[in-house]
Image (cartoon, rainbow, N blue to C red; front, side, top):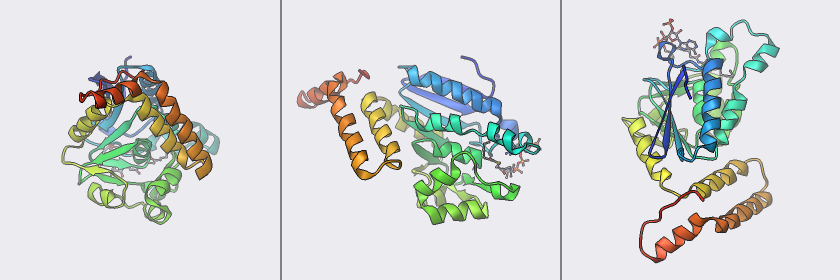
Length: 254
Ligand code: CO8
């Protein structure tokens, strides 16, 4: 499939999506987001894709494209919203890792929050400057950020609009790993995850993602059912037999 605003490549089970509007620091416009949507629809059904890495050329993304938003009416703003695509990325049945260099701001930062793990350069600049534009984060920021770092820390970031460095983001749990070369680090982790049992990864992700929306009893029931269903997979047999036979398992995703 061909794209204009993103570059997609797949090798050894890892698909890399590179945001590619460097002239505007990868500002997210409707066309780019529509391409992300198509790419993630593809990944979902593609057995060659076991893990996805999202990154950007020099910068991750400096937010939604402000030039597209200035004159929007409330109804048009509702139509511009990126949430359906971002929700699709968050619910992707495969692990998704963000590799963050340079700016990850506004909608760009919200995109990283849809990823399962965030790896940032220590000097990356991450935050939500929307308040300085007379708006606030509207693609999941007010919901996903407090769930990740707590309500007070989220309010501080969103109310002040001040970015934090990758290093500071590590301190508050906004990123999981810092590395001088975040893409290299993300690829190494992605290759490790690509060798794991895909169905177990996918169901673990679904259980964790649903934890916020469920009470403990319902969440534990979901976990039990998902866990038990793994015993119908050949990967479960393979994983346990490989342990007993003292060899490395070869998971096929079946
Ligand atoms: N939108 C459009 N163009 C942008 C954006 C953006 N978000 N960010 C940077 N650019 C453009 C600049 O206009 C400039 O273009 P040109 O060369 O034609 O003048 C080019 O990228 C390079 O940028 P700068 O010259 O400004 O580079 P600096 O290194 O001086 O500054 C900054 C970098 C600090 C990142 C600065 O560009 C900046 O403040 N950008 C805007 C950051 C921002 O406010 N982001 C939030 C946007 S709003 C948002 O994301 C809403 C999310 C909610 C989404 C809901 C669904 C849509």
